[in-house]
Image (cartoon, rainbow, N blue to C red; front, side, top):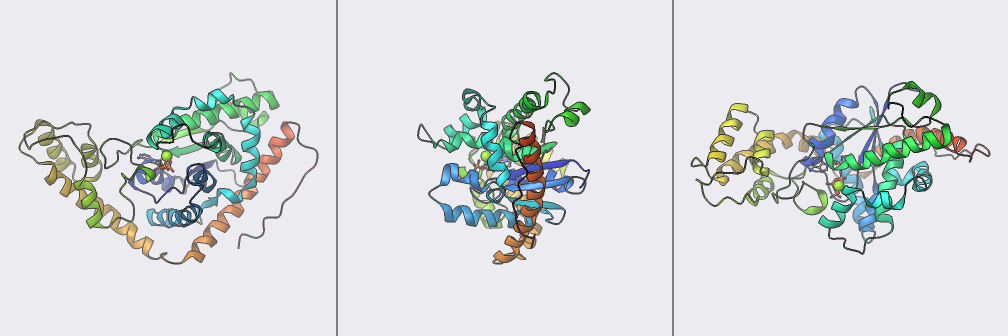
Length: 357
Ligand code: ATP
Ligand code: MG
């Protein structure tokens, strides 16, 4: 078994991937797949928390996300691409961990609250919706992951995960709750390492609505698959609140974030920003066109790679089957350790998951 530290992160198939995923998480994953045991989870069960009426879309989005992974540079030989619904240990740990978290603690999670608000879920969300936050602690801990490369919106979920890991290790393994994360006792005595959030330089990429974070389900995202024409159109619709070329612009606007991130020539980016902020005769439209061109340049090689996997579902399913088989080896081991620790170790069970191919 590998001695490299494990990394877990993933995406919910609620749509296709966008630039927020690339900058918030995927870019980091591409570095980590060279040095760590990486597992990238397709959180398809979690998609049912808000889309249980759309199983076909969830199925299709799951496959499309894998194509986006390949387009962005994730290598399925180096990193396991894992299908959540075929990893039973995650479901079992979710139930167990739900007992370690007070209900009110889960509902206080600011990311959950924000999602309820921006997705307009009102009071009618399913019981399973808040349960996904518990499920996410199981996703991470099932792999005994040390780090989770995510955008900043996920930090409260990682915080919850750290609490679960500490509580489990204390309650069932007698690990003192005051020791440091990386104290060797944690892993010698405990079952779970305490995972940390690995938030990249761009923790939150703003959406083309100019208000919310770029998000699959908010219709404000520039997708990895967007054509230059679409990118231009979406940029055109970006709201900045500026009335004229001489209005001083907001340096913290989405448009300025895009300028800093996408215009490769740093001097040019600084010049645009300076003129915009001072309202020095520069229109939003002009900046938007330049940004759109830079974005399309970034996307072009990704789209070329993606085209190789278009329409070939069997290849994609083979990738998922292989990654999921690798994941089941790891997570069954974790589950057995956890059960042994918490009084459920009556006898060993073994489930046959079939070959990786
Ligand atoms: P949904 O609208 O369904 O919540 P999403 O676009 O927020 O979708 P997630 O599947 O929730 O995407 O997130 C996957 C990963 O991408 C997480 O690590 C998340 O932090 C990161 N991420 C998503 N959107 C952004 C963004 N705009 N900026 C930075 N990181 C992001
Ligand atoms: Mg999200």
